[in-house]
Length: 498
Ligand code: NAD
Image (cartoon, rainbow, N blue to C red; front, side, top):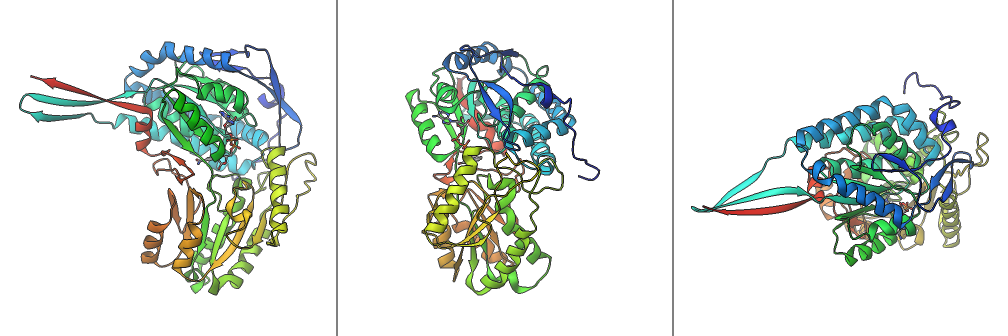
């Protein structure tokens, strides 16, 4: 971020666009019922946009517009679709600062992260799927001397997508890019807490895609979200959000026998074996840094390493260093490029985290660091908490329930057997971190951890070509990686007899 200065938002799009509409069929369409809701910024607690409160009619209109163009889009040659996705990636790069600002105002995340992570990851994702779709090969095999079998991949048609508020743009892109690459039309509902960046994105790319290929309909989960998930005219519903909502989405999808992809909650263990402390070298430093990842994005990450498991023999010495490093996390104004931790995304989320501070204390966990609100003098009305370290045991609620804040619950293990017992004692299975200098141990433990992503000697990197998704109640299906295309396609078999 060299040379980046705190931005002046006076006169920017964010200052004058006070109300948005839905993006349907390439046009800005007011909600059929004429209702809007206030969207406050978690940075200062003040309302900065008004958003359509859409319902069934709005969803139906978007789905209709998508159907009108699905043949054309589905039959567009992959090379042409690919070029459009590349153009979208360029637009993201060109508007990096504007979109990053929007992410920060809408979600509260520090601008250094929006600029350095969310935006570059989003454009890379479009480029990855633009490339993958061109490298596809068809499949044909001979059944016998007179029969040929062709396998043709066809887009599903019109797909519904529902996303959460923690990475508003990136979560949308993770869903849109493969769906569009595979030739589908999309109706996407952003989270009601953070709709702005996706709407700005739609505005910026409006002339790249044919009208109706991408539609954004805003509103609340039980209204617009439910209308989308229950709509009989979509071919699939892809959802990211809480496990409890995921359960509902599955029920809705079952009404019309629609396939689902579910990316749900997590309670990821971050495991530090004794070899970490063998030397005080750069590996050790990296591991201590890895511990602090629970505070990244204010802990609002589905794979937040919210449980730290530390081998008994190194516990005291490791924790001393870890706490020292957490003390250095700079809290403050999210728009200041030196701020490392910003605001929680909403007042509800802020209150939920505070309630877990109480729950942890009441169930006897020891507060090793933090455990309170952070009074932000720049923005007294915003939603700020301290990064917090609890010490306790894995049976406690703070070890079992997803807090979705900058809170880590720490415990110890004696040996590999106990490590695995604790790590896998969770209804979730999304991510895990493992820090060891022993490559044999790394592979053996990684294979036994019940999680869809195991980071060994790293944490929180999300390359587009690495499959991502949950075991157990953390979800169904995968995102990222070229395998994602098949989550958005049907396979047709054509048997030809000569
Ligand atoms: P949420 O489930 O409350 O909401 C997610 C989306 O679902 C929102 O757009 C919301 O409006 C919609 N929704 C809510 N109720 C609905 C209903 N009845 N019908 C249809 N749609 C409905 O989740 P959240 O609080 O926005 O996000 C946080 C959660 O997301 C956490 O549990 C986190 O772990 C999870 N998450 C998972 C991943 C992953 O890839 N596994 C990534 C990011 C976030």
